[in-house]
Image 1 (tube, one colour):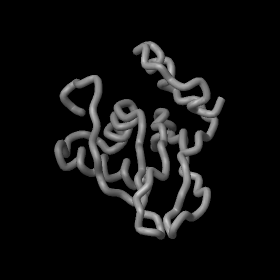
Image 2 (spheres, helix red, strand yellow; image 1 turned 180 degrees about the horizontal axis):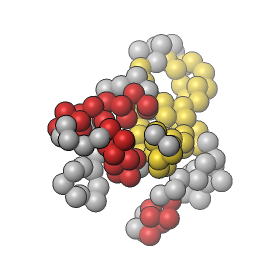
Image 3 (cartoon, helix red, strand yellow; image 1 turned 45 degrees about the horizontal axis):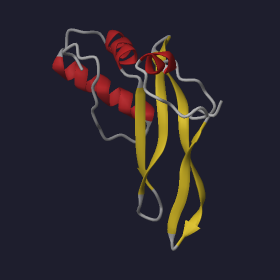
Image 4 (cartoon, helix red, strand yellow; image 1 turned 90 degrees about the vertical axis):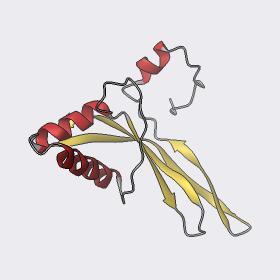
Length: 127
């Protein structure tokens, strides 16, 4: 992500979105001790659009539990907003069934997606 690429994807292990951002900050500090934490947090907020959290459920299956947008920076922390959350809909043969449900929040990067001519279902984000 620090090489100027327009797109990128990475993974890391964390217990929550906030924990993931703190871990990214720690990795950046280890890479360059001369940069203050606040500046690193701002860089993370301006670099990352989405955090996708996968969770192991009680039945042992892994599901995407949340898709959260990093919307920017406010004060000393990144501003986060859930775009999709996992909604459990029942059990089938001992397995948890469900779907990612839109929260109805409009992602701030929606216009950038539309500008790429990527077709999106009309009700994808619940509005």
